[in-house]
Amino acid sequence: MDANYHEGKEELPFQSEGIRAGSWKEDRTPQDWGIAPDAAMENDELGNMLLHCMSILPEKWRAVFSLRVVDELDTETVCKELDITSSNLWVILHRAKLQLRECVERNWFTD
Image (cartoon, one colour):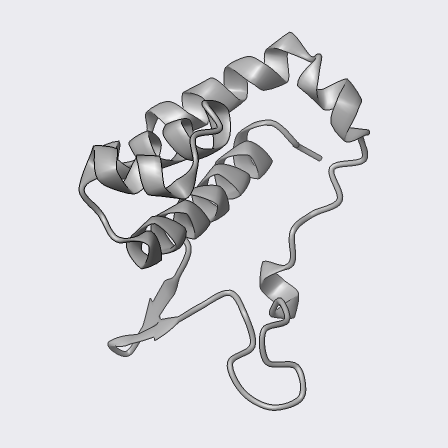
């Protein structure tokens, strides 16, 4: 999940105040995967892992991610198709990307 819960309070992965607002918190910074993006896209095993990670997303998140990112449909079309607002689409898309990143990092990249 993209947020931690401590004492009933949600902690997002970004700094929320001060000069570093909007920056990644140190413990939530994306890892360097050490591979070129073009090479990764050609890697069948990584593709299969990404498909697995997509399959465990909540249904609505998977639909938003698939329609907007994979199928490259425009925001308006996706919103009409799923009966959601554009604000909701961007929140869902952000959360889906965070969960996908976490899943791939946890299952693909091991020390």
